[in-house]
Amino acid sequence: MSAHGTPIPMTSRKAAGLRGVANVPGDKSISHRSLILGALSVGETRITGLLEGDDVLDTGRAMEAFGAEVINHGGGAWSVHGVGVGGFAEPTQVIDCGNSGTGVRLIMGAMATSPITATFTGDASLNGRPMGRVTVPLALFGTQSVGRAEGRLPMTIVGAADPVPVRYTVPVPSAQVKSAVLFAGLNAPGETVVIEKEATRDHTERMFAGFGAEITVEDTDEGRVITLVGQPELRPQEITVPRDPSSAAFPVCAALIVEGSDVLVPNIGLNPTRAGLFTTLREMGADLEYENLREEGGEPVADLRAKFSPNLKGIEVPPERAASMIDEYPVLSVVASFATGQTMMRGVRELRVKESDRIDAMAKGLRAAGISVDEGEDWWAVTGRGHGDVPGGATVESRLDHRIAMSFLVMGMATENPMTVDDAGPVATSFPIFEPLMAELGAQITRSNQ
Image 1 (tube, rainbow, N blue to C red):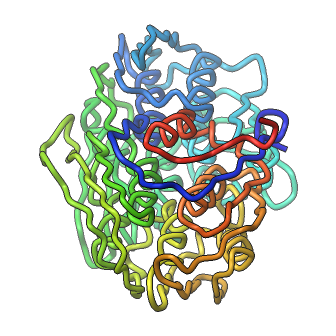
Image 2: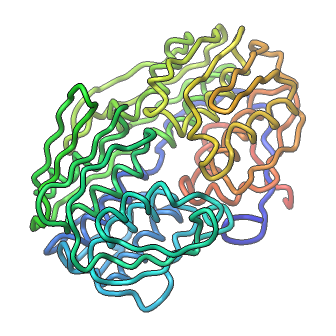
C-alpha cells in the first residue's frame, strides 16, 4: 500500500530519447529546515521554491501544531510567523510525519529542550525505522522518550524542563542525528558541541548561521567539531530554496542511459556535502557538465547538462564519499547496470535503515531485471552489462520507498523490456511532479489502471 493511500502501480518503457529542461522541485533538506527555523525565529520568514511534497508539507503542519503560523501563498511561496527559540506550544494532537525520517528527527530535536510533550507517528515505513539514534543523544539534554520496541514510532517525547548543553560524538555519519542534536542545543544554555568523524551534509550549520545563531565549525584531530552557543534570538530570513540534487539525480541518470538524450537541469544545489553522485558519474565516464556556476543564499548552484553516455565504466566508489550521496546509491546502481564491469559501493550500512532496506530492495529488483549483484552488510557490487544489453521485464516492490520506485522507473526507460513498480505512490513524498516532468522529457511511464 502506498504511503498515503491505495497502491499506484506504474510501468516504464524504453524511451526514444529524453530531451529538454527538467525543472526539479526545491531541495527537501533545505525546505524542512526553512520551515523549522522559521518557526523558531521571531517574526516572518519568507520562503520561495519550497518543495511541496508530502514530507515537507507534513513538517509545515507540525510547525503549526507547535504554534507557528505557516501560510501558503501559492507557486512555491510560503511564509512562517515564528514563535522564537523556546516558544513552542504543546501540540493538542499527535504529530504525523508521514514518510519523513528527516522531518520527524529534526522536529524531535527542535522540541526536545522545551518543557512540552509531543507524540509522533508516521506511515508504515516510518514507524518501522529506528529512532534510538536520535533519542539517545537527546536524553543527554534531559529529554525523555517512550516508544515501541527498539525505539520505533509511535513515540512520545517529553521535553527537558531544565536542559543542559551536551558534547556528543555522532557514532555513524548521519546529518539527521547531528541536526537533531544541534536543534536541541538551540534552547540549551551554554555551548552544545557535536563531533563528526566523517562530514555529512552541512545545511543545518549554514542555515543556523544565516538565521543568526553563533555557530562555528572546526576540523580537528577528533573530527569535524561543531560548536553552538545556545538560546539565541533567531532572525527571520528570506530564503530561496535551490533545486534538490537528490531529485535531479533521476532525470540526470535517465539521460545518461537513454540513447539520444540531452537534458538540462537548472539551478541545482551543489553543496559539496551533497554532490557526490555527480562526481561519481563523471568518474564513470558520464557526459555531465556544470554550466553557469554561481552562489545563491550561501549555497553553490549550477545548471547541469546530462547527455547519453554509451561508454560508462564500473568503478569503486570511495567509501568516504558515501555521506555526500547516501540517497543516490539506488539510482547509481541503475546506471551501473548499463556500465561495463563492476561498480563497488562500500561504507553504505546506512542504506539498510532508510525508508526501506535499500540494498536488499535494489539487489532483488536488479537481479529480477537480469543484473548480477553481490552484497554484504555495508557494501554491494553491481556488475553491469553495458548499453543495450539489460533485459528488464520485471515487476519490483517499492517497499513504500520513493527512491526505490523512481530508480526502477528510470531503469525501465532503457531496458529492452518494460519495468513495473508495484506502488509508485510514495514518489509524492519528495518528487510530486516526477511523472509529468519525465513525460515532458520523453519518458513513457503509464499507470497500470490506465
